[in-house]
Amino acid sequence: MHLAAKADYVPDMEDTFEIFMVATPGLENALLSEALENGFSDAKATPGGVTITGTWADVWRANLVMRGATRVLARVGSFMAFHLAQLDKRSRKFPWGDILRADVPVRVEVSTSKKSKIYHAGAATQRIETALKDSHGMTISADAPVAIKVRIDDNRVTISVDTSGESLHKRGHKEAVGKAPMRETLAALMLRECGYDGTEPVMDPMCGSGTFLIEATEIAMGLYPGRTRDFAFQQLATFDGTQWDDMRRVGKTHTPTHHFTGSDRDAGAIRMATANAERAGVAEHITFQNLSATDITRPEGPPGLIICNPPYGGRIGNQNMLYGVYAGLGEAIKRECAGWRVGIVTSEAGLAKATGLPFKPRGPAIPHGGLKVWLFQTLPL
Ligand SMILES: C[S@@+](CC[C@H](N)C(=O)[O-])C[C@H]1O[C@@H](n2cnc3c(N)ncnc32)[C@H](O)[C@@H]1O
Image (cartoon, rainbow, N blue to C red; front, top):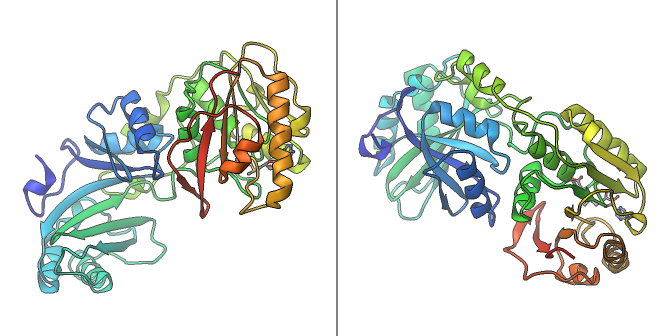
């Protein structure tokens, strides 16, 4: 049964409903390809993410296995409301107790559209929170572990539960981060955009805290990205701990067929990257070295993928000095790495050009840390 078909309907364990995986804008198609590869066969890309239909077990699996998703929302119900009194009444009638536990605090976040008669998000939030408190005995708290996300569009109130909690880029095994770390979700989608599927070596000559290499090694080993962290869905009434433990355990891992190489001119970054790789359980497959990008040497074995995000002008460092850094990186790659492909993430086309590498036309702009960045890719050199 489709949720929108019946008001006040909440799915139970066997029912299917709409599940929305939030993507980094611009990378919806990369997330779609990951979802299809993971067996979410009805996945469809929409602006801002990927939609699938599934059960609560699919919600758990999406959180556990999807590397590129920022969070996973379960669309648990919807009803029409044309004014606040109606929102109040229907929110009171909504069977929250089928999904939420009275002993776990929740918070409510409402967004409205101009097409709706209810346009004041603050007033709508207050009505829903009061219904949760007064009619269902829930506790509302600004730092609650469970967030209810309500969208009011064209007078339809759609209720979603954020089943992830902390953003999924927090894999749970990385403590040390540098000045401008790449988010794990973005790194995974960039690796995918570069055609990386776990079967070739990867090198990052400006590896910082090691995000690209740790993601790449985990992919090569078949490790689940969410294997060590907790999720908001564990605090819902729909959670089944035994089934979840089975799901989390069945991950099949293997020894990677290739080796991974990271370097950075900052010794502190190399210490951080090494510690992060150890915590992730992938350190034995990565060699980290403290050296300048101009001093890299070709790793032994077949060619693979070089990927990095050098410093950006807008954020750290001085833009003019950076031209020299990019030029030095490009020269070293051309000198040492014939046959390797290159993917460089940066905020300036001019900086990418300074490498002298033969980039293909760049892809879409991707928001990252308050900036727009692009992935510049080459064919094998
Ligand atoms: C934006 S950060 C990379 C972040 C990294 N991807 C991560 O996830 O943590 C850029 C890195 O380039 C390093 N770097 C800058 N110039 C360099 C050079 N000439 N050679 C090697 N590393 C350099 C910096 O020390 C910094 O760690």
